[in-house]
Image (cartoon, rainbow, N blue to C red; front, side, top):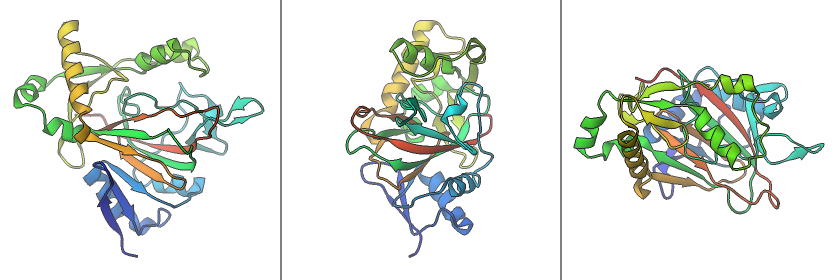
Length: 284
């Protein structure tokens, strides 16, 4: 079967077929689709951890353990893979049960945010648990010129502490971070409009989950701008909703999309996934 990419139903993502994620020779076509669409989907292709790690590593260096992450959510023997799951073993969760349930870009609060995230679906609930993606490249392109000019040269602050404080206040069952881990949650400044290093196209780089304020602005003005950008980014024409199936692998470009994992009934259903992440460069 020849390799082909078609527009995914109901959004900007690309669905790629005719490829083998374990075959290195297919990567050039996969990478092209990744840059063209921002989110790509490969269906019905179970992945072993070794194959997922080898495939993910073709995008760049992989993320392993991080200071704010418990070793218990990393796959034993494969620390490059984080387990996203509500399963339990001996009464303890084997992974992160409520990962990503807010609009964000992975590790945008670091000096060098993630380039790509690769998630492979092992078990999927029959309802709920979709992932929403917002195309921030298209969102920027459709901004009024007056607002684009207003954003030129502006930077915004990003920190994981924003989400961590919110989710813990809402009663998350996650194990609280240690004081040392909380102290490591620094604030990082990034351009509000970044240039994609591979395509040269401009994209918004802010999100409700981690972005707190615009540098050098009064609080009210800063919040007004961010709220306007968030609202515009979530226009229906900028959104792709992914309905997961067992065997799906979804690869997304954190440099141009934000995402949100929707909830599901964790008392009735199981959702078990393997996530690998690729380090990126400093936004400019």
